[in-house]
Image (cartoon, rainbow, N blue to C red; front, top):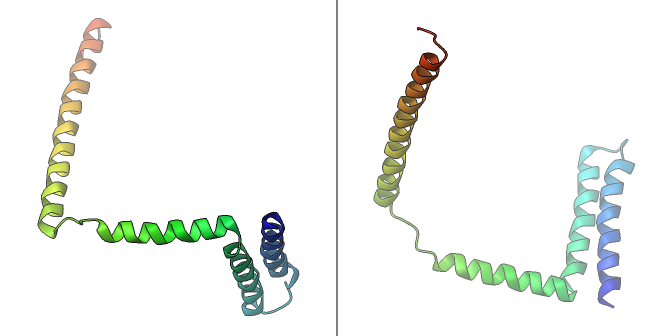
Length: 114
């Protein structure tokens, strides 16, 4: 029975997509409403399947977990961003020095003077 429900949901979703393209001569609003109705009906049918119930439960649990997250303060965010920016600038300078040094070595090895 569960597979039949998923098949019906797939057909409803496909019907929404096909209706969007089938109604090319209709106003855009009618086409979009037909698409959305197909997707909404497909979603409703999916919610009555085992997988749909598990997915709904997963989303509900995810929302509860997000509520438990301790977000950093503005001060902590600015400090962390500052450290990251300082590290990026320092690393860019270091890599520029290494690149310049290697270029000098390669020119010397190839007997080119610059």
